[in-house]
Amino acid sequence: MFVRSLRDVEATDYFVEWGSGTSHRLLTQKDGMGFTVCHTVVHANTVSLLEYRNHLEACYCIAGEGEVEDMQGNVFPIRKGDIYVLDQHDKHYLRGGRDEDLILVSIFNPPLKGTERHNLDDPSGSAY
Image (cartoon, rainbow, N blue to C red; front, side, top):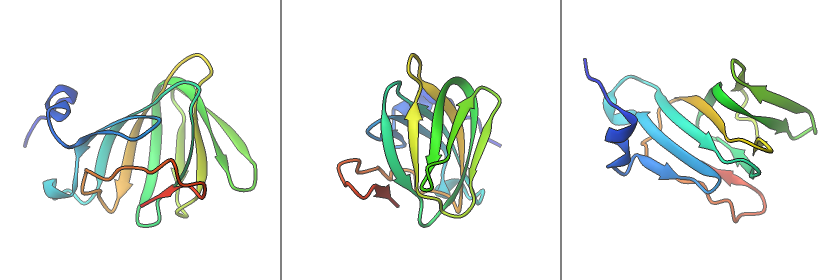
C-alpha cells in the first residue's frame, strides 16, 4: 500500500502543465497497477484538440464545468458528477468553462509513463 498526495506529485516530473491546464499523474506505469489516475485541471476559456491513439481514457468531473466535442460536432456539457469516456481513441475538443476551470479525475488504460505532454501548437491536434 502507498499514499500519494497532489503536493507529493508537484515536486516531481509527474506534475505536467499540458498547455490548457495541469495534470497531477498520481498513478503511473511504474506503479504497476495497469492504469493511470490523474487529477486534471482544464483552465477556463481554453480549447484543446486532443487524441489518445495509444490509450483509452475516462474522465469523471469532480468540480467546475466545461464541455467535450466529438469530431461530428456533437457537444456534451460536462459538470460535476458527469463522466465522459473516450472508448474509441476518439479525437475531441476539450473546453474549460466560461467562468470556471473544469476539474477531472482522468483514468488511462494502458497506463501513462507519466511525463507525456501535449503539443497544442499542432493544428491537427495533440496525440500520444
